[in-house]
Image: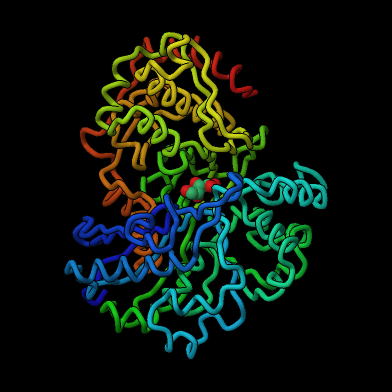
Length: 522
Ligand code: XUL
């Protein structure tokens, strides 16, 4: 491989753009870096990665900020001495569902060469100034219209792997078409965050992979192509505005000259098609084969698992996406993940260590205190009006019992993950936990007890960026998923958390049935 054995994985997430650089021969992560949107790119006014909006259901972000983050991240890496000379390939991960709307001429060479940086190169070509992201819940009407036009929720699920979902790209595109028809018509291509970022890297309009494409309510799950009925039900002329759909190991092309000249990336470094953060994380935690489900505790909490056959959630909350390693994956997403944990932490002026100390002060089952943790509008189950619900003692309900409130949010989140993943076939023997929340052993203990299985953790915190680097290595050098997982995604020694049988029984016999009734889970 001409002495080049390093692969770069980038992760354009809700709150930051991060990088993991791996050395394939040495089987190690050689560099990690990150740019935080709120703190490092404050001029874009996106606290926690989201543009302020008076309507709590509307959540948009600034695509120029994502472009600027790519320059900021690579500058930071170059200036801290990261050596790109051995780079053999790049891929990436994007927060799923978010869309970027571009006019004709985006990425034409003459337009790019005149621009001083990536944000300036993109700015004149945005046909929609902002990008709706996965946190948006404002398209209920459009979901109903699309579902009706397609012939009902079952048909929607059968075709796309999911019912019509507020945050998915199709309903968002329909809303844009209805509200700003002229700008929609002025749009020549609609990218996902993943394909937008890959386009910036390559200087060509990049395709969308089956993993992320399945999160749009526009791709036919069975044949991996844009579904003409779904497209027609969404907006006129849509199929012509969508990038090509390709397998997740497709090489888009070489990195553009901009990155060679500015950051010293070797000319011709191949860029592999990007995917969504959940499909990438599936790879990054070694969950590519069925039997190893994953819980990711990030801005959103998600549960996902590789599947051989596409099975759909009878309750309509879960989704089926493409697995980058082939086949399918299930995905259940909860909006009240880190944001709910942070709301409780901040309410009592705690840091994470203090949060964990309080968690340990209350017994499993929380003396009967329970919470429905809807700090922001929720998607699983659908709750459009935010507001946590407290059931229990007066002290607890009035927020005077901090340890009980801390335990209630975590027990509720663990119960949600357990109850909403029951439709996925096969009881696991272990669950891999990743994301920022995985560092908190108290949280992992509650997950182990709620699922009644071993919890395994991994060394690399950013499994989406790591998964992207592993995908780049697989696509460029043909290394097997087994070997890549053995090198980079083995559970960390000492990271295991075992369930405690009496607590498992208590949750099973008492807590879970009560939570099921309170939350109305069937
Ligand atoms: C998945 C989902 C989120 C985003 C952001 O359906 O909406 O997990 O991908 O992480």
